[in-house]
Length: 136
Image (cartoon, rainbow, N blue to C red; front, top):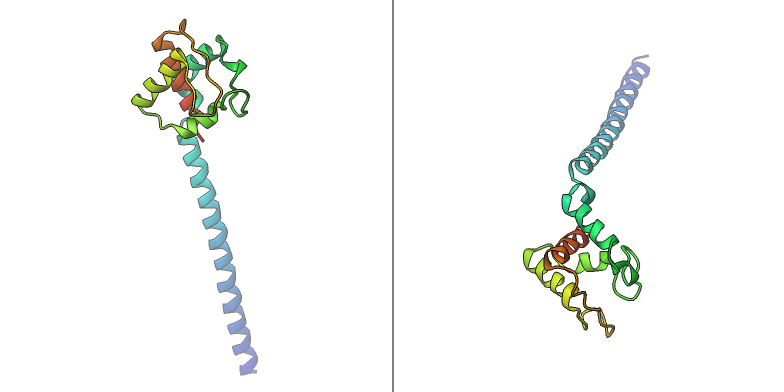
């Protein structure tokens, strides 16, 4: 009888300990998911940035979408490829804006980008700021 009681007590203790580990794992997984969701919620979306809306409007009103798309290479690189290649620094914004205004070739292959002399430097910089916000 003592053996049965002892074995039952040990079995209950093992069952009780095993269940709490599972609960801890479930709780940890839930906390990790909650933390990830909270981090995503606190990270502002690119579209929340005022440069995004201004740049998007300028790009949409120009002929840029003839040769470029956000995620698809057409004649020139996709905007996302450009964003992933260049850091969002003031120097790169100026450099890329000058390429919009003056044209350029060689960075993305042999096809030359057409100059856009009617686009002001300020508007070109706004377009570049929008494009660089598309980085993944």
